[in-house]
Image 1: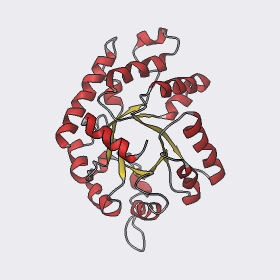
Image 2: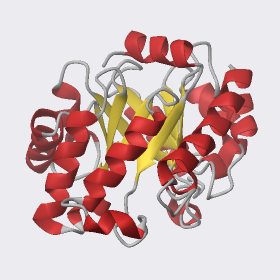
Image 3: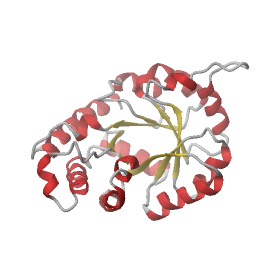
Length: 267
């Protein structure tokens, strides 16, 4: 999916919502455990209930890998039912030497068919560029994350001035373009978005941390939105686990609709 197509979906749906499919078999409604593939059945009902309200789905690969071969089969089946017009993100946080990254890219782009993958940039350009060799595919680099440990390294002051995450932004933006690279910036760090936009004004930002993690959607839009919206705001647990009974998909839809309505106002 290219930038124009993604922007068209945002305008059409009046939404920049990304739903994280962090499907934990220990948290899904108990009645689904009778299904042949409980994780897939959960995802299927979530997608059917919310696909008109979001522009992206983001399966977190750890939740599928944790279930071994069965989990990977659940992931593969899930990818086949995500509508073509919805942007898919492999939340894999890959980052290794070039030869290994080439294999990661092949697996996620060619085998599973993801539109994008999250990548850790700290091994440098040669660990990222193999992902950039695919037409209409995207790399989403970790820039400033929403977890508390982000303060351990990402916000360190450099001797030459600025912070480590700012140096990552400045350096990495030369590896690709605003048409094939995005950046992860946590919603809990919304106050940093104004500075980030000075460095990368045109790139899309994937913003986790709204919902269960307490990030403010209003603040994210205020400081992070650009002329083409430029935002994909992710919510996972607050939508997926809004309900625990047989009406879980309806409860998930209601939560997603609440966020989408707020997004429509912000757009």
